[in-house]
Length: 68
Picture (cartoon, helix red, strand yellow):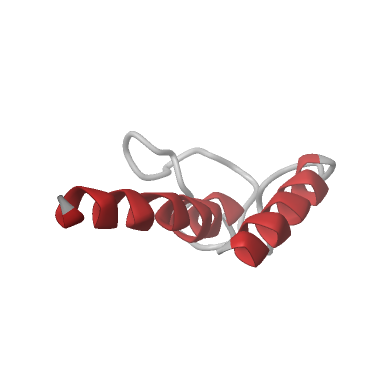
């Protein structure tokens, strides 16, 4: 978990210096998923960020809630 957090932070800092959050797909938020705006044709790094890093935050919280 710690290594994932550190590597995710380093990757996030690197992505922050890039011109956008698209990889290979059409560089546009038009026609994205409702509410989140993620691209439907692929190439959107925000999806991997959400499921990778935020799930690491949610799982320990879920375990803590189920423990007690």
